[in-house]
Image (tube, rainbow, N blue to C red; front, side, top):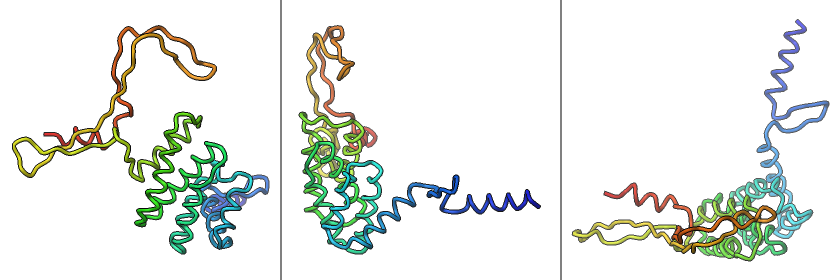
Length: 231
């Protein structure tokens, strides 16, 4: 009987949203905590100022633990008050301070905008322009992890940079059909000495024997699709 009682108790505990260790309770998955936090913010902070003050306090907007919460907040607001949701997105793109903070806030705004699944061309353009201007500023030192996430969100918004998409040309011998060609931009790498690594690991490596050309960006899905569709 004691074994059965202990077994039933264990099943009950594992079937809950909460887990308990030494009388300390926590959610079994971070998603529940993120959603309930977003729900609390949306239901209790009804003005743009209240929401932004909370996100900027203690630099929460730059904290990775808050990333999904802010995205969920925007998505939830979009169901209840789309005007306020768009205001939050625009405010996030105007955050200044450090480069990492600016890029993180704009990345969150971009993610939240795609989660809205609503047609707002002017907001898309504003967020896309802001994200591109920060992400591709060669003078800014931003961690690779933040850059990678920003690049993903820029793709979802529609990356309009030359060299990452494709273009169409009339198919020879046809009056109506067209063929898609990858728009690949190349950059020249001269031969000679070059720096390997970065920071304290940087060092001059052996020289390149030959100069060469390399694509400015990795091949994108849109460009590879041209190959798949070729005849």
